[in-house]
Length: 295
Length: 231
Image 1 (cartoon, chains in turn green, yellow):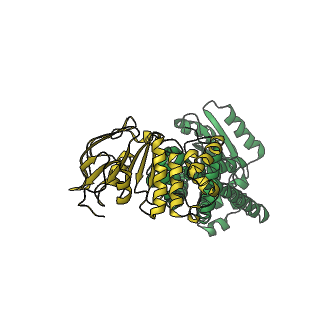
Image 2 (image 1 turned 180 degrees about the vertical axis):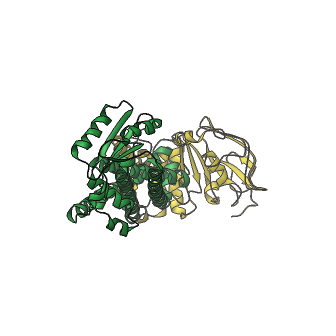
Image 3 (image 1 turned 60 degrees about the vertical axis):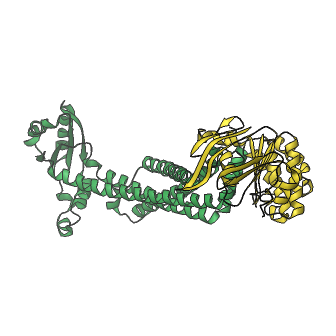
């Protein structure tokens, strides 16, 4: 079965132009919902960046004295490096720890006010090869000079991770709902296009057009709408992201800086947005064609 | 060319459109199907076009058995069948040329093929000077001739006509009949459902009469009614 490219392009653009208002509505809905979905995903990335110091299964915290010397800190660091039981570790200095403290205690501002940065202990966050080693490894540092406390109780950490995972779940659920509504709208636009061209479709069937020949222009119509909507949404996501960057850097909102996402995350989100636009457009129109074209 | 065997078709419970219909039409025949409204003429034509499947019975058209034909084969089957209707079924947003060319476009014919064959076909139906007009700028008779051009452009083996003169004045009806006769003379089987007594009576072709879905009469060189019928 030969379907000429020229025919398909002509039919698809003709359809889009004839129903231009409906097409515009579909494109706008897709772009709004995909922009929201993309922004939600970036927010999710931001949340996970902000909580990443808890990620990777930190099992052991070694709090240093707030006034520990650099030599004492280095001694702990090099000892950590030499231990075979340790998979990885990183050092949270005072200013980072203070910010984390402010975030964790955001609901009790008077407590935050009463504590200054210099009172906050810096800490080593340690990931072990085997979590069961935590007590024995911890006891090595308990008595070390400059160490304030060793903590391998994960309760507090777990609570925080739990809360953020709920937030992320809600955001993703919202994005899914928006995408479903976008598909339904595309479905409706294609339905209208099909209904307005019933006569033509009947004639096509009469003269022996194959089902795919009839379907392809309609499906392509949905694809184009999805793609254009996604490109607009992708631009909006970049806009939102750079606005956020601007606010953070210009007004020195350091609390938010933890939420900044990498350009890699942005690129991945954009790819996701465009892919979803294509999928939503094609799936919506494919369903509409099956449902309403009766071919 | 067409063979219908014991075909039943009903749309609702105890409302039969076709009852035990059997008939056979040879290549190159010209056959009228007559009968009152609701006698099953249109259903018969729809079954032959595979727009409907019979409930029981078998239907062979152009060498294909239709009741067991899978849906994806239907478009290819229809390319061998031309069909025209009382309401013409032209596309209002395409020109005369565009309407005829459409039948070739949808089956993937090349532009060159279209440019060669469409003007030739329009010449045959006498509309070559109106190829850039739109259907609503034409008279009913001209529109039906465009529909005939579209139906015949693929040189189908069979032409099915469902009351093609139903909306036309006598003069236009005769020009349409003239075309159908010419098409029939090329060897194409023509099956025409009609109410038009004058045409049936003067053409003296085979007549099949349907009454409440049953074949009541099948007569070579017949007339519309047997004297008792008025219309």
